[in-house]
Length: 223
Image (cartoon, rainbow, N blue to C red; front, side):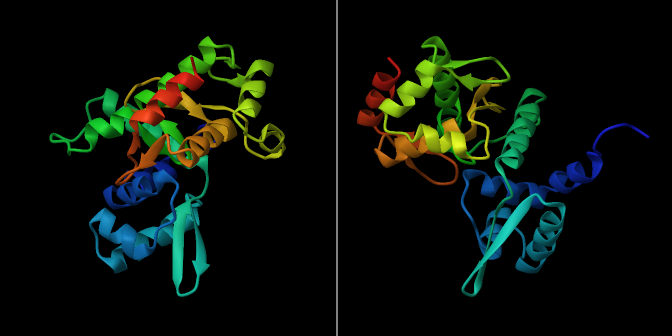
């Protein structure tokens, strides 16, 4: 018997196309109903219910009841990071759609990965933070004192981030860039700030679109 956690059961769950589609729909951090997941996954509602039950049992998703509805979400950012890494592996090995939709270029430029910025802009963000000495490390990323001061200057509650259970920074492998972008509490706080200030807006699915003034503000904040 091999040592360590068994990955075959989780891999089999994620490997089913319908379940993979539903998990991908939840990668933008929203909570969706079974009907919304069924429609997005292209399957019938009873079939979706069976898949959701298995994903719940495995701990890949969580559910919250509100009124008559049950809302499903990923159980944590580690699930999103694992899915993002699998997408990167599929991209590298050529397991990609023969035809891509009109949102594909926008998805590669900027998208949401559970609760932080991914894509070309997400990778650029981390590279600029490193260049300015605001974070340090390659795989084990951590903010520097200068980085914490910069966050506080933007109006982010640094003490609140430090009190949370999440790591301040995480290296999340980006499927389209094949390099890491910034996850963790710091990555989530920066995306929240950019959305709150109108630097970018959420579009269909996981796509994030910078406004022209927002892109200038993004560049200026990291200049």
